[in-house]
Image (cartoon, rainbow, N blue to C red):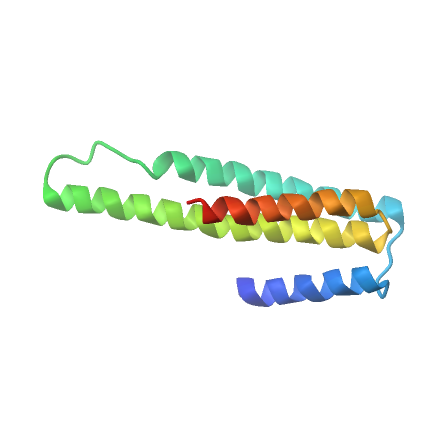
Length: 124
């Protein structure tokens, strides 16, 4: 499944939760939302680790070594930017589960976290 297809599925689930087509018990919704929150945390940790390798050194002074160093750094930054989208998707799933149980304040907080994840990618 591509990221775009997954995002389309998330959007459909979120819309169904917003319209009340999909309903969950609040306790079950919170458990599901917690799993997505944990996933977002793991992805964020991975993203931070990628950030630490995006500025590598020690490749030497040759032009080819500098090009290799730059290439690895670019790949790490691109992967970190892609993780923004996965983190945002996890928070949107969290939001959808919370909305499906009528937990609107908690769902708003999840939506804000998704927006922060997407906006942090724009800053790179």
